[in-house]
Length: 339
Ligand SMILES: O=P(O)(O)OC[C@H]1O[C@](O)(COP(=O)(O)O)[C@@H](O)[C@@H]1O
Ligand SMILES: [Mg+2]
Ligand SMILES: [Mg+2]
Image (cartoon, rainbow, N blue to C red; front, top):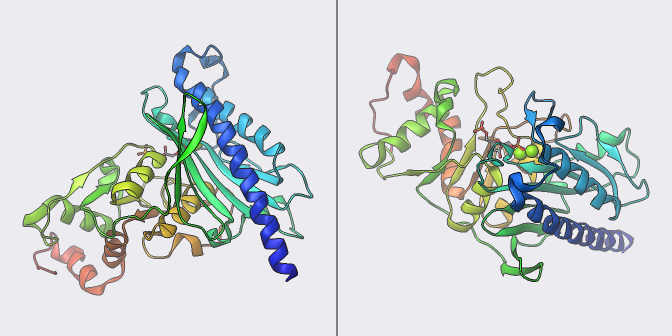
């Protein structure tokens, strides 16, 4: 009984957090819509984040704007891509929020969709330190989702044990209206998304899968595929939720990319929550993303998500001995038909 009262209280707190995110997204949408017209976006405030990327002004601004929003919500601590350490807010609050304040930031100047990704977790009653709140598996999320600032500004979220929902901002009255409820990802789709310029750095399983997709109807998968790469996770996720497909950002041989590029707690986890709630899947190639216990607030993970058929197929390329045997270097290019 006590437990369910606490769970209800957390859920209504999470709804408050979502409302604060939606309100802030309207402000962000205005700023992003101005592009270079926004006077404060000068190169002078560019700095370097932990990845060594040049941070666009907007990354920093988005971080500050969302942190301020979380100060008005029942949030005990924030972890952010733009903050090297987690930040304490109201220690009595029941929730913590991890966020990527601006995702796809290499696209800002190109006028391509970007977004904000968020993960809402229960605050631990007695954490050993502030980061401990965030080192819970994604399955513990009370809410998760993202905002995409594109031709439409949309918020996509799952709250509590609920389904994946989409609301679109009507810019005329600055209100989000529900556009889709209980979104379902198609179980199968011949569309994949991967940055193929990293081909030479991938492991043999990913190469074999993409080789087979590229061979199309003449290859072992016996169907023609289509490829998309926006380099904006939120935009790819939105497309996949609406029309299916699979997204892959695998680990690769480049220094620092052993676990890929994407961050577990504030990129992969919320996207995985939305994918699973929509009947799709999300893995690190093999394990469900939501079952992984993060080792660090900025830990990375390989990410494969989308329609469950292709996500499972990618896992087979990693685990099925028949597939592996045919990929052995001795065989060079595989000659056997497998399917
Ligand atoms: O430039 P790459 O290596 O293709 O990576 C693109 C990926 O990096 C990201 O931009 C990473 O997010 P940030 O922009 O928040 O760093 C994803 O949105 C996107 O999927
Ligand atoms: Mg990102
Ligand atoms: Mg970012």
